[in-house]
Amino acid sequence: MIEGLKIIPYVEVDGIRLIRNSEILSCFERMVQDGTAESVFYDRSVTSPQEFFTFIKNHADLFLYIEYLGQPAGVAWFQTIAQGVAQGHFCIFSSLWGQPEIVDIGKEVVRFAHKAYHLLIGFIPRWNVRAIHYMEELGSKRIATIPEFAVTGPMVADEVVMISFTRGYNENLH
Image (tube, rainbow, N blue to C red; front, top):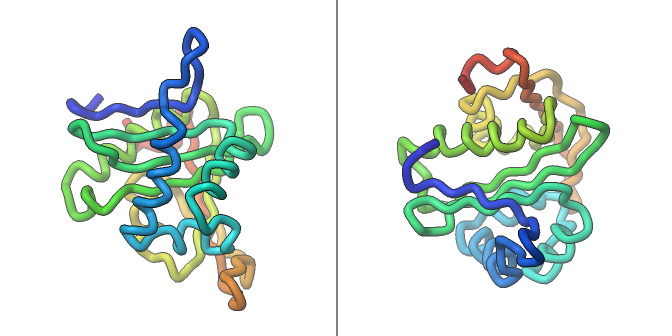
């Protein structure tokens, strides 16, 4: 584990949530500030902090709040598709962009998720080259491109399908 990194799941321990609701709300505000909210929610399904909170409460089977050196660093959430399989979503905040730790932090988040899921699937619009490259750096493999699958407001775009396996398939994670 990277010194100064905390990956905190949105769970209760002895009746107390490890992440405050206000922290989840502030994550969306940070995405807006960083200019990533429209890339993460390119289908425009979430457009406000309250919608983000409701979405996480109702649709995320595993939500992770990421802190680095005592500061919010990002979020990730996973929606179960089948036993051991989830669709993953990731957003690292701008304070880490361009920093050498960003890849190692992402790999730790993927390792954490792989405790619950042996297969992670991500769908990324082909125009989001930065996200595709980042996921490849974390060890995910590009397996397909689905033509005109991503609906981005009034536009339609190709979507890249990425996967991450456990059990030795992701040699870059180890």
